Image 1 (tube, chains in turn green, purple):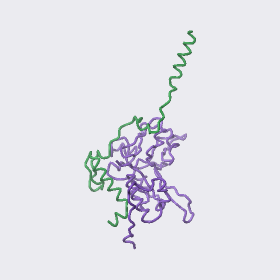
Image 2 (cartoon, one colour; image 1 turned 45 degrees about the vertical axis):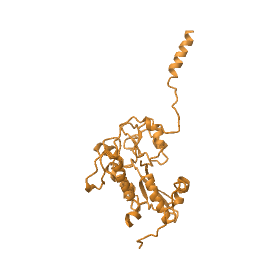
Image 3 (cartoon, one colour; image 1 turned 90 degrees about the horizontal axis):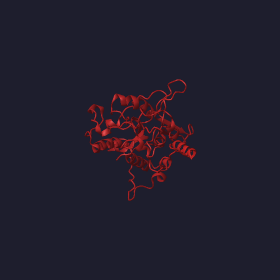
Image 4 (cartoon, rainbow over the protein chains, first blue to last red; image 1 turned 90 degrees about the vertical axis):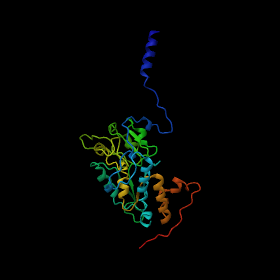
Length: 83
Length: 212
């Protein structure tokens, strides 16, 4: 009886780490990130005018989005040249 | 919300490697590490040669993120895939998982020593204080925090490489393809993105103005 009990205890301890992670379609790895938190780009002051970083209001994502969109549309040479 | 992506127009890329140089210079990338590179197929075959600039594509479901044993990857609100070098152990799993060969490892030491992974950050730095020296040393410039786009895309002389919100740069590319009448077959536009948004009108054909 004690031998069976001993085998059961050893098996329970030995197999305790043999679990299986949940496998789902949506990416779970993003939720597992344990590193430092990053700051948002719009939480910075815009650069001085001579550095041509554009303007936005610190902390306002919408104004930063507008600034970065302006920058993206500058890649459209037809609009940039012929506007 | 923006989903930052790169798009390279193979009809326009002239393999000048300006994007590679811009990236190297802007982020002071160490010797032996190339965050961006230009791949050419059919090299030297007249009429069949195509080049494309490749770096991290900031996948929506990134395989590097899925395989990382220390979970050092995260995604910003703009869809940029970044990683924490303080957590990275340089195992190289992400290199094997990435279909674009984006993760790079500095090999400066003896016995094939492999350093911490380095890759394109979409010029968005990393998890250090924005625009700080620590961030620059580990990850390079944070141009997004300066209200700018990645240096490679902004420096591209032929505007082959576009960077920014996927919807915006896709519209730029679509208009370009419509105007020149070719190029969609290179990317398989219809296959990848469908015929367009429901109810959307195709862009009107405009004669090219100001041509000399």
